[in-house]
Length: 454
Ligand code: PHE
Image 1 (spheres, rainbow, N blue to C red):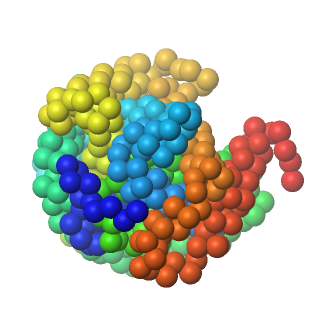
Image 2 (image 1 turned 135 degrees about the vertical axis):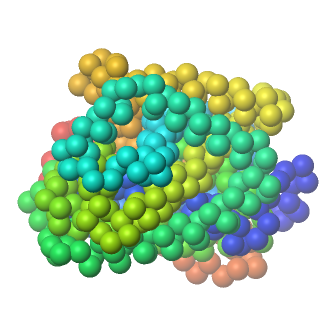
């Protein structure tokens, strides 16, 4: 069974490269922009505890399962399911993943564009000396203006496409290995800055002292969605990256390390942001603008604030880029392997298609702001549908596939690298993917729809 690495296929060249690429995908705006704002809107500490539980009991096992499917299938998510379950409809999960990739890129690249704008504004000094209400107005004006956000969207899509064009080793691997460690250091520096502000304590207790009365079905669904979104799971990104992991890497160890790193970064981002929010008298429930409105205000009140601010938005852009490439790669791998396109054609086609949906999404925060579906603008709808519905649903089917359909011998062979590793956790892992994870995801869905109550 231990076939050598598929010859025509690029693979990550070392353990560090695997961890950097997967962590690069996982760690991004989801941790630094989305985690604080969603936690802020959903009660802080209580949200954090549920989130941590979901990462451990569902997230890391789903991630491991995606690696298994990708490395055993040696193809994009659609192709891997077709290969592992010929003639069965499991490949639909792969197709849902490709659809989710379009939708995620549309709103994710929108926010990535905002980070470029704020980087640029910091460089030109235009945020300096602004009051909190002026900063709120600037953010709103920027979105309403529509033209600049569209331009930044296109620029960011361009960067993403450029890296993807260069392929797995020369593109994804080279950039993530270089950029991820820098990002980590920058975040630690910011964190130290923030907790030493006057009045930081209130922010820390918002994040770390749970108020369980704040737990509602919505909070639980948001925590599940955030766990999936932040770990990049449920849509085949990690099936795709799994197919680039060489046969000698330890899949369980990789999933655990990335799961821990991703969670750490989210918590560190929370520690960097909430003390600052409270010290400034802002509200943790300020929505999507949280880091863009509140933080520039804080930076101004710090010595060397401009420098920290510049680093921060650079960090956010970099973190976003190592994530957008992993989402675009899902579509490109699909087009290359299933529709026999060249990598170049596939990248261009995917980028153009994403850009159409993306520009509409950008405008939905600006001139199309009043166009609502189910009370949400397109941006909000895409964000909700992907993180809270499609990713958990994909994850549900992925664990059911591994737990109940795929052969346990092959699963074990993947986790132990054909018996060369111990993988003593195997029985626990199987128990989780068979029972714990599917039941937990299904219950959160039913609970949030109001079908069951506790
Ligand atoms: N996990 C990424 C982040 O937190 C976003 C992402 C979601 C990437 C789904 C790939 C797939 O920023």
